[in-house]
Length: 133
Image (cartoon, rainbow, N blue to C red; front, side):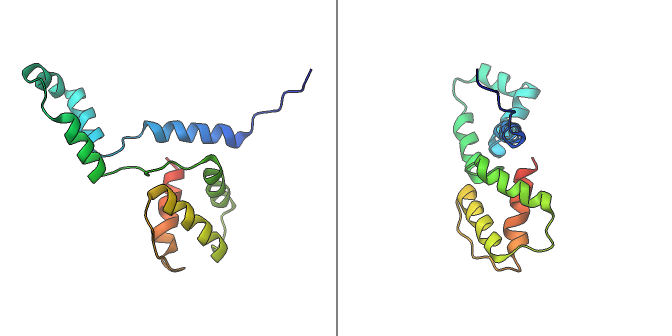
């Protein structure tokens, strides 16, 4: 009989983070849809018309006003950021800046040219916010 290995705390923490991430609205379109459902507006509109264009509008607004990363963090990326945050370093070394910049560019699908001075505001603040949802 094989011994059961205890579950890795990081794996559980990542799964919890991923569930919260997935539950977030993609963008403004999702928020408007949620409000119109909660207030009953959506039901009234659906009773009056067969197609109000809501789905297309929702997708356009989600694309134009996104509220989360285009690609979620992988478990490894999440762990790297979380462990670095938990270590509370006084400064971020250039090698770490490059590592986190690469993660940032992948999840947000944008290329940035940040300097050591702009790293905190352009990259780090957004990544720590993403991990802390």
